[in-house]
Length: 250
Image (cartoon, rainbow, N blue to C red):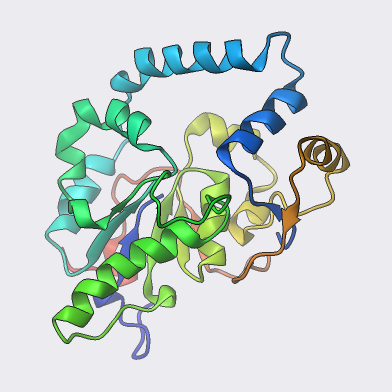
């Protein structure tokens, strides 16, 4: 909620467990392949996966309400930044036919998953990508002699579970708007997702697989939440978004 110390009217909107994996892309691929016990060599799977991504990513479409939301935010009293786990290749595939959406984000405020400023192994659910996105905004504000935006003054829009955790660990508020099939998978665990602790337990099977590929679970800085602390909310649709709740003037 808006207050004197946290003026949402100048908030930044970076876009979408104490024992969380912090992995390289190769380690993540190895873990998934081992966990899923796929009956195909990893190199073959990776090649086929890339081919399917090239075929279907250009057909991706935004979730309901997103186009209008971005249009409204672009001309509102907030700063916008994009923080996506997609690497440059996949981002291009996804965004080529959705260029109108991304005009809301200046190039200088876009942080992709393979951005060299993100330390190795520090993608989501680590908070780095959101903090780097915020820094792109604050760099501009410092140059203008204006007051910087604090993480606690930011609102993250996320569709993924690791992204919610990343936003929480960055000390930012989060709106979780998942794809209906993702929400279906997490029914009954929504409170854990919103607290950023959905994957923070002792998953022994995952631990064993990570040991096999030489990965470790890291502590990580930042604010993991508590159940029902109100710092994150679940919104099943961004249609009819309540701008006033966050002090956004459109």
